[in-house]
Every structure is written in structure tokens, then in C-alpha cells.
Length: 304
Image (cartoon, rainbow, N blue to C red; front, top):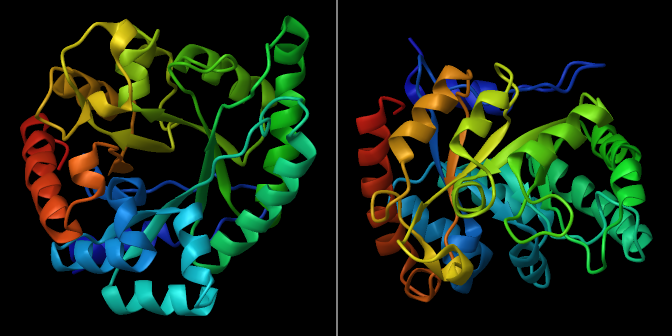
């Protein structure tokens, strides 16, 4: 009989079928998969974060493009893959930040070139999911929104060449896509098999999205989640420093997790935090605390 890790790993690394890139991370039963985002231990670097997390029993990881670049100054993609294999870790997703990737804009041509390079890199590392947030540094017009589905398709076509699922992360303060409702509208209008929606709990709960917006999700539509809690503060003052470990804040995590389970989500809950004491902390100690608290929340919600 397959143990939990082997079961999940088989789903995480299953190659995409020709003509259909709708590959899903699947945990056994009604469960979801606990994972860690490298932003959470970014000060420790690519190698340091992974090695520390491995000692804390972290099996599923989300990779950061900027940390990979620093690693590659003295090593190679082959070395990165060997490191992951030696640590017994599965890279479930990759994070890239590129302006105008999802909307026409002055940075788009350069961002598309970088996107192609990133897709090639992370595909070589065995990653099957890659995302970039909705960022543009200009005022967005209705014409830009009308042009967004075509822009998404162009970006997705590049991801498809490398058998990657790509995802748009809506941001609470984005002047392009700032809500789940808007992100769903654009990904559905694009109607490309390699584009799927994702949710960051912080941007969802602290922004303009509403809990009932989760009802808009189609069964099995959601591809990925960033998992965190939120301190109690005025919405106008909230920023990334208000992200906290699941269970340490006031977000209705039980309600959100149960709704996602109802919508057929069986993928990763990847903890992404930016608090200074975590980012600069010992990655083993940080990961051990996050894992214990996150799995307690997941267990209470019945999704572990």
C-alpha cells in the first residue's frame, strides 16, 4: 500500500497529458497537503531554507525564483535538483514576480522573455506549477481589462510549451486583479487549459473579496493556495507584516478550508509569511513551529 507521501508524490509529478494540462495535486481522501513557501525563510537562501526545513520534516516546498538565481551563481540546475532529491523534497510550485505579465504594458515584452526562461528552469527542476502576481505600475483602463484574456493566453502558451500550469495571484492592493471574482472572470475568459486560479488567504481575507465569493469556484477548478492567518487590524493598515502563522490570527480558517474542500480542492496549503522574525529566523525552528500550528488547524478543519 502506498504511504501518504508516495501517494501525493505520484499526483504531484504526474506528467501532463497532451492537450490537457489540468493536473491536480491530490491528497488522500478529503485531505490537503501542507507545504512551505521559500519566501518564509528567504534570508537563509535557497539551500539553507530547504536544508533547515528538511530537518523539520517538510516534504513539499514552493520555490522562489530570486533565491534560485543566487544559488545558481555558484551551482547549477542539476545541483538544485540533486539537492531536492537528497532532501526528499518535492517542489510543488514556483514563484515568479514579473510586471505586466497578465496585462498589456511597457514591461510586458521583457517579462515574457523572463517568463520563458523561468518556465524552462523550473520545468527542469520537476516543477509543474508556476505563478506570478497581478502587477502593473500604471493606471489600468477598461481597454486593458478587455485585453487581459488575450494577454493571459499568450503567457499560458509559453507555460504550455514546458507542460506547466500557470496561475495568476490576485493581490489585495493590485490596480489590475485584486479579488477572486476578478481573477476568475479573467482566467475563465482566457479559457486556456494551462491557466488555473489560485488563492492567497491573506489577499483573499484582508482585501475586497468576500467569503461568499468562494461559492463562485467550480468543483476542482482551484489549483493552488497560499496559507496564512491575519492579525486583527484595520484593513487600511494591513500589510504583509500582518500575515501570521495559521492559528495565530483572526481569519476564519475553518470556514475557508471547509468551503474549499466542498469545492473539491485537495491541493497544497503553502505557508507564505514575511514577518521579520520568521524570514530571518533559523529555518528549522521556524518550519517546525509553522508545521505544528498549521497541521493543528488543518486537523481541526478535517483537511489533514
